[in-house]
Image (cartoon, rainbow, N blue to C red; front, top):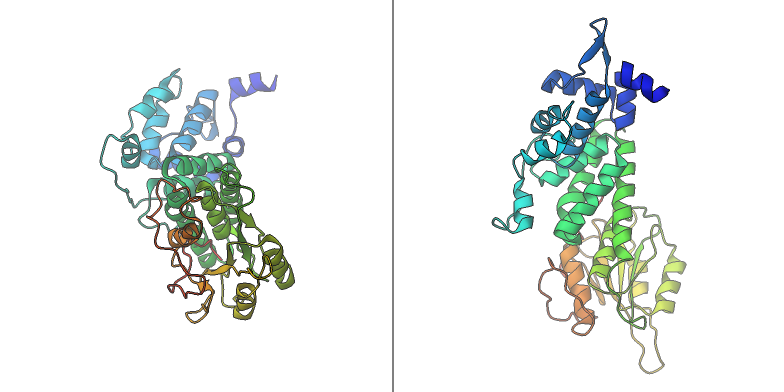
Length: 370
């Protein structure tokens, strides 16, 4: 009975906004800016959205979430109302994004950077996928975010998806949060959750190496809660077929040293987002933790990752990678040539890094807002 009433009388702007996961203000702005309003108004004033109107708005949400500019999306969505099959025809009539051409192999392989709206977030010049992801994030549209994130990983690989889609959108949310007196916190939390979901899914589906291979231990220092960059690195290691043990946020010092001593890792990645959590003393203790048979004991290579580490942090047995790709390459050389599985978009492997060598200065880039 409720469905019959809705079909006959339509629904209010508030009801359709809740159904779509957007704000009523967004729905009204689409009508005012792009002319995609309801066909029926009660008494000439109150909006009543009929099933065809709702289908039109659903198409508008789908297209903008995929990165299509709102004006183009509105023209395509308007064709959906009352025309069976028009959604497919309307989508096919849109200009094909340059990155879609690149992925299909029909055009030159290049990275399209575009300005334009991104749900009110300060994105700057970024991939079109960032704009779709940003709009979905501001709408709190979880399913759309998960779909777009997975599509980015499938199309570009984990490294590029992190550096050019996930991290820029997370940074934009963080900047918006800082400039609006704690607004958009809910956007940052939900986006972070879906980014983590996609990264963890990738981490458990990558190629396997021998269960007897020494792993990479990844951990946030005591007091450090920012885990997404380490989750990205964990997923990228899995993509290369390298074993990893991710211990997550705020690992106590004794627990960290115990994990290193018991697992006998090839490398240990210590993440610090801010100077307040960077602990050089603990890093040196980890780097000096020996394991293995008596007479052939060894220590792990320690990677100091994140912007919290100072220029002078790296000591003997430590490196400070400049970015995600460099961290991957440093770790891969420890396993080369028998175990490393090169990712499609990875940099060429460098010469093996001696365990006592000091590394290049610079944080592991692509951090989440913090």
